[in-house]
Image 1: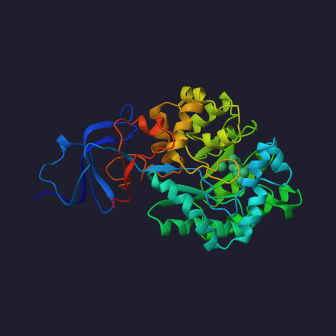
Image 2 (image 1 turned 180 degrees about the vertical axis):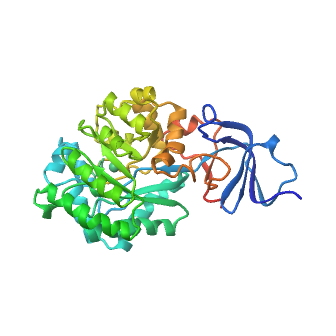
Length: 404
Ligand code: DI6
Ligand code: FE
């Protein structure tokens, strides 16, 4: 008897993004078959049983299918906005100057503390919807605008709740070590103690975080303080990631590698030794061209060194109110190519396979392969390079999340 599927997409061109296939793992005449939300078959039409039965068969009209997109680094739950700060920057103030003058992250903290969970969700939904409208099926969301236990937990709960309101997988990261709150009165060590003793255990117990992140930087936390957070995360069984070497080289990439971090992110100021350490630890480099562009950074991340050492590169929006008010992975890809000279295959892998790897969910999504969730983006394009090349144009035809 013929095998029965829930849905079959046929007459499609597939960019499977499989790591074991050259380039983008393209298949010109492809079929995807799904059952119970998972891909059962993704491959050539000729190898697919002609008598396969399905509740629904969808003619893709020769369109391209990629894995659903993965935005592996966002801060999209927050209160208020920072348009005023943007205006100050237009008058000449730098991102660091504003942060040091009590603006920046801590001003978003004040607005986030005032917002209820429902308000945080309502404020974030349009941003999430913008990502979804371009085919995102997995989105990471960080806390880090609460900086006290209650608000950090509310931010993470709001992020989780977004995942119930939309058909998208949300992965959360606890970023208590993002900035120093005003009430800490300049005492970073004491605050990190609070993060490790109170916030992290409470958040782990509540199951609110899938990973732990930190901001290691002159205007944020030192390597020692970051290590303290990572050791605590390790004891609680949570994987780590790091905002590393964004504004200066403090050795963040190497520290992330030392803790076998899932990813080190930003990396504009990372040196070759950092890249080599990341390669050894299989830590993914998450590149964030939106932030590079928006704060008019001039130092580019060492893409050549990442290639040379075989470091996987992901691309993400870094959606946040201060340094990257960006809600477009398509634009992030264009920026990755234009600003960082990544090629088309690297850009597409960056928002699919490598984004999934950076979140530790590559076993479940990020490529078109049997066994994974059937998360698809179906595109009205002639060739895949169009996804990277165009600016401000969304050719998404349909998005499929878990086979629906
Ligand atoms: N690096 C960034 O680019 C964001 N956070 C971080 O650690 C900026 C967050 C903000 O300015 O609100
Ligand atoms: Fe960030």
